[in-house]
Amino acid sequence: MSKYNDTILTTEGTRLATLAANGKTHYVITRAVATGDDLSDLTDEQLAALTKLPNEVQDGSIVEQVDDPSGSDGIIGTRVQFMNQGLSKSYSMNALGVYAKEDGHDQEVLFSVMTAESQHAQYMPDFADKVVLRFGITIFVIVGDKANVTVKLDPDGLATIKFVEDAIAGIPKPDMTEYYSKKESDDLLSKKVADNGDDSMNLNGKRIMPANDANVVHRNPDTGVVSTPTDFTKLTVNGGKSVATSDDLKSLEASAWRQLDNKYITPASGYTLAPYTSILYKIDDSKHTLYLSGSIVLTDNNAYKVPVTVQLGSIIKSMLTSVVPYLGYANSNSTWAFVFASQSSTNLTFIPVSGVASIAATTGTEGKLAYVTYDELI
Image (cartoon, rainbow, N blue to C red; front, side, top):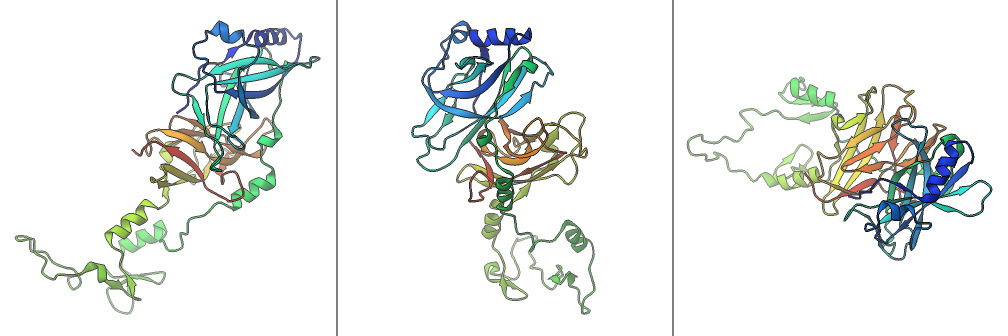
């Protein structure tokens, strides 16, 4: 999992932040960049002296401005995303830089630098296999006074409303028509319903024969011998449908959608998760991939910029990458937009709008499911 050190303001960044704090200038945070150069041997003073990030590999899109969680008026968070589309060579994102431009000046300056912790840089693969990988990170920087700073968002980094609608429409939905509801299952297990004068149970036209002495295979408690040998793989039920073997059932269970216990979905302090919140997941261990679908709902539909954490630590040991788009909060206007969940350890963080966040399909026109990759299952 990628880990990065605290952001270091460059000399130029410190100058702009100081002037902004005193109301003497205004500047725009313009873009973010990444390099594969390892800067871990540089001291903070040497990083601050940089005027350009060496050997920049690619630009990132600034997709959102985020307020400092501590409430400081002098700190701004910029949500940045990097994607490997069009990347011809893989690299490790050893350092990230943020550029800014002061009003009345044409030249951009390197405003801040963030370096990866040793052996924890994000790996960005090339696009040779046409597999999209998105890496998102929030970079917090001291800006002096937010009133004198503008963050230039990249409109190409945000989805249009039509794209969002198309993406949501393309989410594959599990076919639940062959399953009993919880109430039906409870009724089925708790009572017998008289039907045609026999001992069978009937619920909405689905018949299940209860166990009785006539149709149960007996085992001698002393010898363990089954009194009536039976080839269970050849048994059929009413209608001539074959009975599934244990291997069939195991295969079905392995590929089934499961619901994440809501105790692993936690909103910020003071807010409550609605009981109809439902996050579904499906495991493909052959690809070390966990697919996700579903929605998060808070009881307070006026919840504003309230983070909700989905914990996957009960399923996987470590998350490697995540591509989890959702319909939720994107900017200071509290409008719906197509954004990506933040990744941290084995957690994903969502920011609902009006108390709701809905996981969508991944970027593209194929309607693929949102997913995370992992090292191994718990």
